[in-house]
Amino acid sequence: MINLFLLFWMLVVLFTVIGYMRGWQKEVIAMSGLVGAVAALMQFGYEMVSLFGVVPADVMTPEQLQDVRGRQILIQGIFFAIVAFFSYQVVASLAVSVAGGRFGERIRAGLERRIIGMLVGAINGYLVVGGLWSLLEYVPIPDGYEHLPVGVPYPFDPNIILRPAADTLAFGFTEWLPLGIMSPTLWLILFFVTFFIVIVALI
Image (cartoon, rainbow, N blue to C red):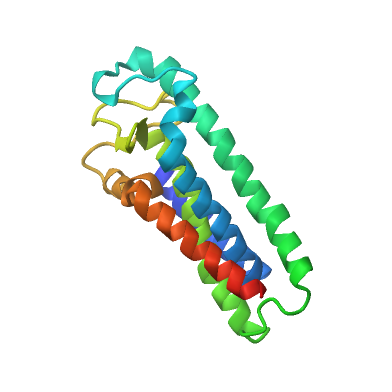
């Protein structure tokens, strides 16, 4: 059985190490794309999954979850994974190439660049892993997302992945996952802020 809370922190540490190795330039561009992906889900997640059927969280049964929720998670997960991949592997590399040696001149190369990359990498790890976990814990509604009711399981085999019990630290942490921590408007504002930072860095 997968311990989601432990897995979350293990992967965040992994992203932190990756950020240290890649440096802050690529990481901050990736962060902009990841924030944009979360903002897009918050704004259009309901419309996206409505193509596959929507059941309000407060009337869901385990049987409905196995079908409808499974398809919701799949389509959102594919969208999020594609944006994350392109943010990390394509957009970041292209931006650094276009900027030449100018990108990041304000921060000296070496340890400072890597430490900042490590911090941004940790944030990116939270956005990637927390974003995917959010898709299990939150249900799309017209105004964003709402927390899955207590006692409703994930639409997967409980022998493989089990939702944290309501009285555990892991369940309390789900309130701090990306889809639950801020409103759609705040995520949209955050996207524009991070995008502006990238533009300024590229100039």
